[in-house]
Length: 104
Image (cartoon, rainbow, N blue to C red):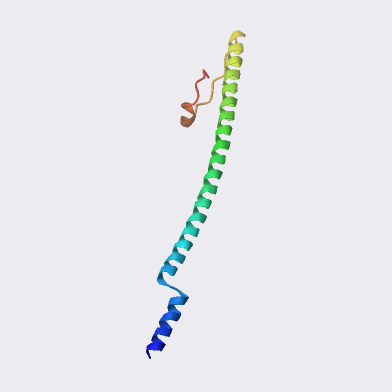
């Protein structure tokens, strides 16, 4: 009987130890964390690229608006020099009012 018990115990010990199971769990968790980190890094890189595109687009739009503003001032000045009356402007929406600094 003692030989049988020792045989079962030896077979179990040779197959898997609690320490090996913990190590395997750690390996699985570590692998999943690395995968998650890779996904997060990829998303961050995509967000940075999108942010750069948006910054460039905003800069281009600001330049376009600045050019339009200068062009409108030039046209208004020429109309006034010609002695003509400038037509009345439509009301400026509230949200746009803080961004418009021209004499309309």
